[in-house]
Structures are given as C-alpha cells and as structure tokens.
Image (cartoon, rainbow, N blue to C red; front, side, top):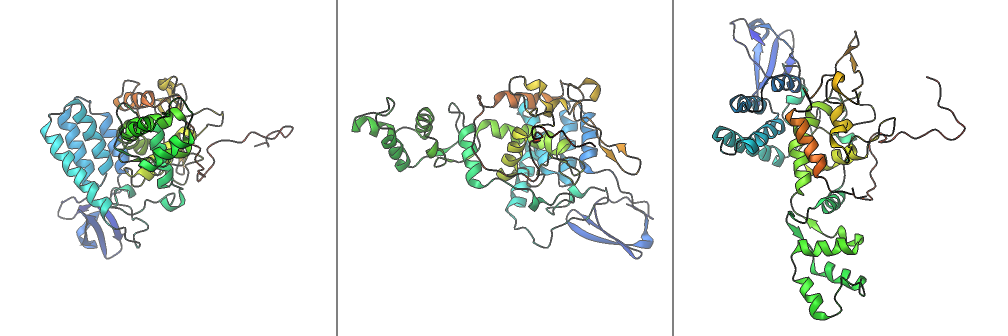
Amino acid sequence: MRLTSGQQMEGILIEQSAGKVVLRIGGIETTFPADKVLSVTKLPPVTERYAAMRAAIEDSDAEQLVALSEWLMRRGQLELAKGELDALLQRQPANGPAKRLQDLVRTQIMLRDSSPVDANRSTSAPDATGDPDASDGAARPGIEPTSIPLLSAEQINLMKVFEVDLTRPPPLVIARETVMRVMEQFSGHPLVPASREGREAILRQTPAEQLNLLFALKARDAYGQVRVQGQPESMSRFRDAVLTTYVLNSCATNACHGGLDAGRLVLMNRRPNSDATVYSNFYILEHFRTAGDKPLLDYDNPERSILLQAGLPRADSLFKHPVVPRGENQIDAWRPAFRSPTDRRFTDTMAWIRSMYRPRPDYKIEYKPLRPLTVEAPAPGNPPAAR
C-alpha cells in the first residue's frame, strides 16, 4: 500500500472501504484514512514470491539465504524459514547469523503452536500482498482444514514404529508387561529363551533391542504398544527437507493441491510441523496413484519419482505436470519447482526417498482420504463413459 506521503506499507489487508483501509502489520491492526491512501496493490502470494526469489539464490550464498529466511519469518512463513535455515546450517554449521535466526524462528513456532486457537478466526482475510497464507494462524481459504481427514495419534505412533531405524533409534518406551506378554505368546520360538534367566536378560535390554525382537518375531499386535518419543530419522528428514521446503511450498499451496481445485490429490497445508500434518501428508503421497496407476514415489529409482519429475520444467521431465488453467483467460498457472535435477530440493527429496526403510511396510491403517487416492478400474464389460 502506498500513502499520499510517499510511504509504502505492507501487511495483511483486513478491510478496505470508502472511509478507511485497515492493515495488520506485525500482528497489530492499523487503520489508515482513505484520503491518506494513494493505492493498494495486491502482490502475488508470499509463497510465489519466495519461489521466485529462491530460484535466483545459489545454495552457497549464505548471506542472501539468511536474508530470505528473515523475509519469510516477517511474513509468518515460519516453516519455510526454518527449512531454509536448517538446510543452510547443515552445509555451514558455524554460520552465526543463521543459527541466531534459526533459534528465533524455532521460538516463534513453539509460541504459535502452544497458543490456543481462537474459534472466531476460522477464515482469513487476504493480505495486502494478496497472500492469505500470511495470516497469523487463521485458516487459509480453499479447502477447509477441518474437512481434510488426519491420522489419529495411535495411527501415527504405529507408523513411527514401522519407520524406526534400529541403528539410530529415537527415544522408545516399551512396557515390561508388553515384552513379557510377547515372550509368553511366542514361547517355543527359537528367539525366546526357555529359561527364566534368559527371559530376564531380555527384559533388561534397551527398548531398541526389545523392538528388534518384536520385529524378528513379527509380533505385530504389540507394535502399537511401543511408544515412539520423537521422530524416526527418515520422517524427520521428510518433514524438514521435503515437506516444508518443497511439498508445501510448491504442491500443497492453495492454488494447487491445497485448494478447491486440487483434484484427487489433496494435501494438508496447516500446522506443517505437527505430526498429524506430517504423517497424513506422507501417507497420502505414498499411497496416491495416478490415473495410470503409477505411484508418486519410486523407491527403486528415486530420481524417476513422479513427485520429483512433476516439479521439473516440462521439457526436462519424464512425467510432465498437467496444465493448470486459471483465470478468465485460462492461463497456465503452474511453475516448475526445480530448475534442474541438481537443484538442492530435488537432491534432498531424492536422498530422503532413498533413505526410507525397504521393503516398504504395510501399516494396515484404515484411512479414508478426502478424495480417492486411487482410480477404480471400470467393471468388466462396462467401457468407460464417453467424455
């Protein structure tokens, strides 16, 4: 917004009427008399501007990446800022400005997530940049977050158990009674000692060693009784290097798979660091199948994954992203997320896919998504309806 004094202001547009313009700037609603306002310009969404700016910055340009992260933080894009800073500090662990800003961003995320949600803030007003994503905590327009089914805490914990890397496990808790019950159930199995001393030795093992026994016995009924406190390493990498830096920024925006025109693939784009969002989005991405019954994730050839290939410029892609017509002129709104397969986010996502446990487990979780993850084949003898 430009004032008649020549000053420029930027914030979330709360109200614009014949008498006044109200912006939320730094969380504070500020009123400007209409006769003092020269013009109000709605800029592209913050996520679009971020993508354009990020594409122009080399991964080695730490100063610009810190500045970009600060820009994101000021606009409420805390997860994107955290993702950039986490990646930068992996490459440059001693970068002081990045570490200080990372601490500040983490604190703001903690304060935001610990704040009670105001029931009256169910929808957001677009900001003066035209970006509803910049609203501080309110729901984004598009698909209502409450309409997207999320996995339960029990389902998420079970997925965590399956994804634990026993060589680098997160903190685990297994009740003594659980281990005793499993040994009784599998008594006679070569891995279960016949002697009381041998069974007592197992009860003194670390939780990771006990979980290894449960896996070896395939004591699936007991998996859900293991409590995983923290994140398996592969899922932590998915959250920090894939979900917040690529998927939410490029795939799950309101203009794409997080909005009303998402098609079958619908992703949650609120509370990106919450387990419910992380694991529900992962489950959807892993189980989604295209109309040609192809998965988005290719664990055998990660670089050929549709999740990655669809983010490349169409001329370079094995699986080209469909045209996304928008507006009266039906202009293609899609933009590539990666400049090339050497893009850091491309290689980070590829490394994450490669790090996932194989063979992939069947969680046997009952989850009904907002829209079908697969396309049902027509019944035999019934050809597809003409379009």
